[in-house]
Amino acid sequence: MKAIFISYNQALTDRVHKILDDCGVRGFTKWALTEGRGSNDGEPHYGTHAWPSMNASILAIVDDAKVAPVLDALRAMDAATSQQGSRAFVWNIEQTM
Image (cartoon, rainbow, N blue to C red):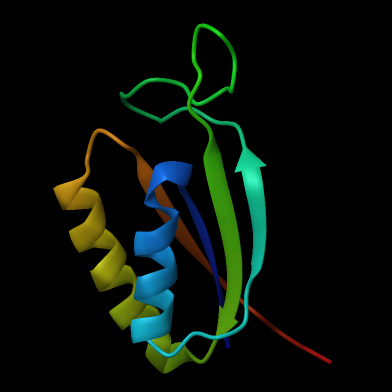
C-alpha cells in the first residue's frame, strides 16, 4: 500500500475529486485550507490580503496499482493548470489497522 499526499490550489478541488473518483480512490483525508508556496515559482498561497489564494491537501492510502493512474491524471491536470500549482508525493505504508 502507498500514501499519496496531494497539495493543490483549492480552486482545483472538483478536478482533484474527479481524478480520485475516476481512479477508484474512495477514502481520503482532506485539509480544506493549507498554506504553501512552490519550490521553483508561482505565487504563495497564504490566504492573506497580499496572497489571497489557499491550498487544500489530501492524503489517500491506496493499493500500489492505483498510484500510477492517479499520478498520471494529476500530472495532466497540473500541465493544464500550471499557474495554479499542484504537487503529489508518494510514501510506503508499512501497516494499517
